[in-house]
Length: 395
Image (cartoon, rainbow, N blue to C red; front, side, top):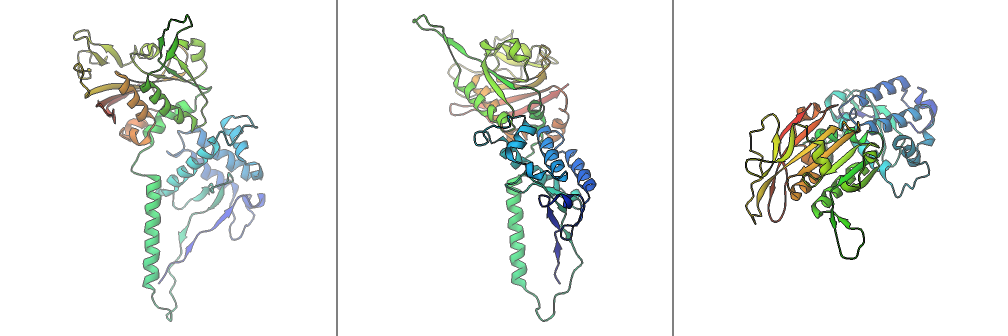
């Protein structure tokens, strides 16, 4: 006995007639069915919190169904989905290619779920921005093999081995044991917010005897946090600017979302978190810096206790994503009590795997709310981190 596997597919780039239900080979697909499947995909966990990828997929599907698949080029997608200038240099800005790769991964994750096995499929072939529509593979009734050929155990074992290898490769690529929920839930509102994002870092003035205006210098740890956070924005096509704290004005902050790097060194971070549940302060009883819980102000469990010259200690950090009442825009604060802690926070916020330490349930509760995450960071002479999530809070 053997199984015959039917995989009826057609390329939507072939003809407009095929997309409108005219037979293409052995397949006839109604545009209404394609659009219904599109809506199911866009409301799935893989897409509903990503406006960019949802717009990307909707554009290529609708243009294909409307017979305009020939217009689906990289520059066109960049202009219509990411708001780039139609003549932008695609070699210098790979945002469409990066997002297309992520889109393909999300589609694979969607169809890999057991409850989507019988649906019409929408796929985006590698190297193309024209989707393909097709029926999900189904297994036919078993067909008896000719008696004269008999069994072919080697062929069966070989096919089974190939199948196992393919599943292993797919599993390694998709990494289903790593939850991207917290990473996506945290950053999606920033990616989708209007206007360019502003990254604000602390900098100290360095005076000299030349009479020239003092230069501002950023700490190496803040610079490393900045270097980890900028790709989080760039990879999703989010425009951004970088300013030092002293050069940032209210007019700058009113242009869009902002990310503040540093805590005690960044006055704007301290101002923004002043009324939040978790904030930084110097403990009046011990004169030591700590993370203060406004709901339990007497607690000193998250206080920095470090002897002079001690290279190993525990730092504490706060990650906040809040709506700034002064500007109406989203603001993210990423800071540790020490600069080493701030650097570790940058690594945490730029890693989906690192943020997977936050439970899926907690991440789902963040939608449309302010969020704070308190972290403990082991610091040694050689390194800082990885952070340990102590608590999350949203309101």
